[in-house]
Amino acid sequence: MKRSQINALIKSTVGWLEERHVFLPPFAYWTPAEWAKKGHEYDEIRENMLGWDVTDYGQGNFDDVGLLLFTIRNGNLSKAEFAKPYAEKMLISQVDQISPNHFHWNKMEDIINRGGGKLFLQLWNATSKEALADTDVTVRIDGKVCTVPAGGSVLLAPGESITLTPGIYHLFTAKEERVLAWEVSMVNDDLTDNRFYETQERFTTIEEDEPAEYLLCNEYPEAK
Ligand SMILES: [Fe+2]
Image (cartoon, rainbow, N blue to C red; front, side, top):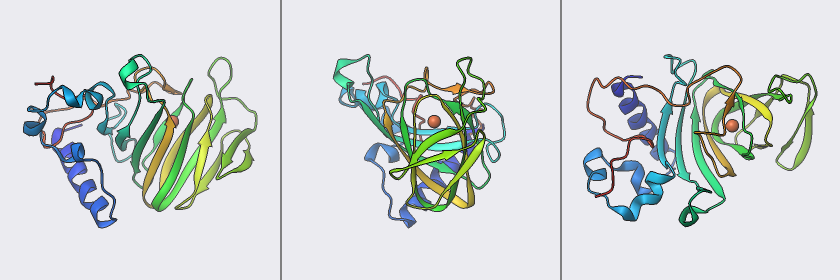
């Protein structure tokens, strides 16, 4: 992705959230120059990759395949000082923009539609060889056990949420309008715990066509 596209997406997202009275922690709004002055007191943000995450999954077409995320909190099970066992993320999905099919080996996650359009998810169980199983998929939607056939879908209206256990393949997209989604989960490790059905890059490659106005979660400078 071009840096100019990432700058514009984050800037317009900040405005869209403010209109909806949704506010992120202070580090969401720091410039690269401000980041350069931050010391070790902010190591938790750097080490656990909190913050902005804009990805096209390496496909080069963000409008069709992509997601804009902000990780608000996350633990790190390999570092005792960050042993928080849970994570919280904001996920913004555009209409018909696919977040590609994947499952997690370890992470259980709830995905919540906080507002906007409807959130469409398509589900399969993974086989022991990580293929798509032809078995029914059982999930919980706001406390109710629901079973869908392999490749079946659910549509979450604003306020509704789904619990996905490890080993359930899921892809999702927004319908009707952009969706402000949220994820409440066990610790998230994007470097090791995503099994994409078709090989994808989790993070984008950036073409630096203008200076960054915001840093992504994998771009923070060393502590001062
Ligand atoms: Fe997931």
